[in-house]
Length: 213
Image 1 (spheres, rainbow, N blue to C red):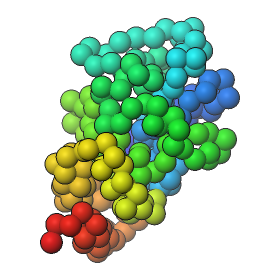
Image 2: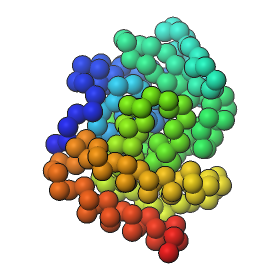
Image 3: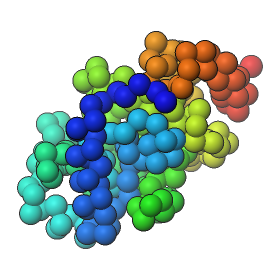
């Protein structure tokens, strides 16, 4: 199995928090835990969810706080940061409206998890990444989805077209992340020699689907 990116203690606490809020509020899971559900790879230190206004009340008992300069809120539950992407309010910080996320999901282990192609687009966005470690984790997550989640690149392309996402914010980033992830392959692949052939295969597929040649 790949090397762990985060420590066991924090990811185990985060997973307990996810289990705790399941069934107590109506939400759609995005972020690192959503990637984990699809790829079986790295767990996450925090919990990222999309939700409507009617689900916000549950989190008020834990306090709802602001990030500076962006329209994303968060609560802290059992030392885990739960990022709240609230319908309409957080739309400006995402490539698609939160309402799109709330209507495009698959139920896994009793949790609504955003569709994997939409998740891939969200993971590329880097909405408030200034922390180098979190940027590296985003790269690991994106490539893990490409390698192990059976991503439908045509479905991904349809989201890109529907929301008029520029190539430099979509397919270009996929290609760059595949190169940037090579030094991080120990967090993605089971063996040292597994990464490069998978990378080259995916780059060819991306270039074909997005008409680079």
